[in-house]
Image (cartoon, rainbow, N blue to C red; front, side, top):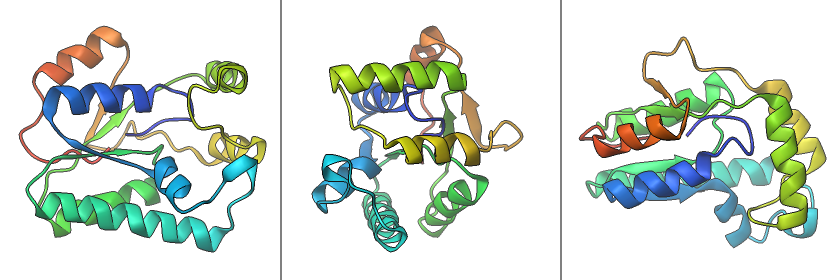
Amino acid sequence: MCGLPFAGKSTLARQLAERTGARVVVLDAINGERGLGLDGAAIPPDEWRRTYDEAYRRIAEQLSAGHSVIFDHGNFSRAERDEVRAVGRRARARVRFVYVPVAAEEARRRWLRNRQSHERYDVRDDDFALALRVFESPDEEPDVLRVEDRAAELRWADSPPAQAEAS
């Protein structure tokens, strides 16, 4: 997946997984498993690197077993997306990113609303600001499917590519 926090990536990832049988690797869940970020604690950069390494390991493992994979994470920069592409290349999998665009103001509204509802993992203030600052739109990248609305999501999910999806 690709997009700002609270764009709807996790919701779409679950829908796609249900329709396609793809395995989902969730970066936030890996941090939770590792006991990181609990109660809003900052995650040091070296721990983030370990979380990413674990996510890439899980993606590679699932691809090697012949499964399609959805990587539920923002993949905010071209460099992050290139790392996912490299994991896919090593597994000889076809990689596509599903970009869920959302205006920064709408992402902020959803983020603040989540602070009341607790429907999903929270994002620290500084991490939210960082995501807004470093996000690079993938519009010019050749392997990106831009999802504009709910109808488009469902049309695409009805006929997914046959090989692995790095999201």
